[in-house]
Amino acid sequence: MKNIAVITGASSGIGKKFAETLKDQGKFDEVWVIARRKERLEALKSLIPFPVKSIALDLSDKASFKTYETLLSIENPNIRLLINCSGYGKFCATMDASVEDNLNMMDLNCGAVLAICQLSIPYMEKGAKIINIASVAALQPIPYINVYGATKSFVLSFSRALNRELKRDGISVMAVCPFWTKTDFFDRAIDEDKERVVKKYIAMYTPEQIVSRAWSDLKKGKDVSMYGFKARGQALLVKLLPHSLVMSVWMKQQELE
Image 1 (cartoon, one colour):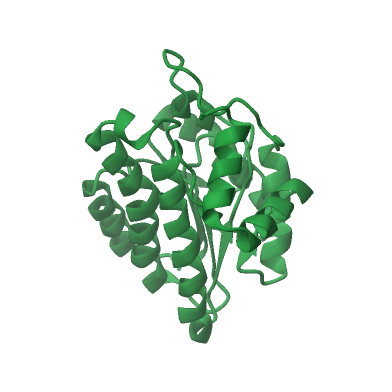
Image 2 (tube, one colour):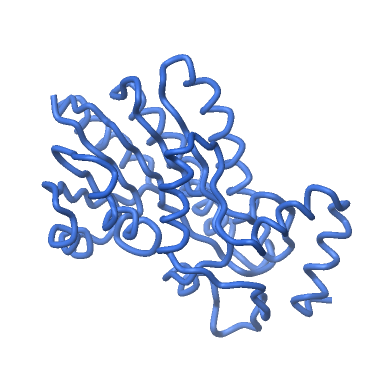
């Protein structure tokens, strides 16, 4: 039985950085990398010192889960590490996006995380680990980034509760909550033809910083990983302050009212 790692959203950003640094986390017989762009997945073969299986799937399409499930049944691997990084956001008012776009965001950010976890767990043994990418946006309601933030709230809550459910099996689950991070995320989130929603960034981190902290927190057995003093400070404040005030501060900061 092959010991493998599975990384979704591996073609860019945080997912790619997890793939590139996998060599420091143990030995794997094979690494399965999943994303839409086959050519980018193929490029990872020169960056990962383990055999790589590139799997081109659009995880917002429910048919992709059947493909993944079939592959698991054929290969019957031992999944030692699962990292769910697929996802995207849109910076706009809820009503300025189409119903299709909003549902697609929910399908990928929530549905794919749930499906890939549920399909993978039967192939995991004691000591296996799951990392799901949530966001600092999961901690508060955010007008004009509403749907994205709500999907990440699901990921955070789901991951923490799943961690408790799987504790008896010796499988750990950790949610990573990045703050603003310099990735291709903004290429899809921002509509250049419309007025910008986000005009001020309190801090901007790199995938290297987020991933390095995540690996460290995973070894410590944490269920949530968050990098950066400003990110952790904001996370504390939104726990203490009324949500109405938090939203008002956000709206004023971004000159949205």
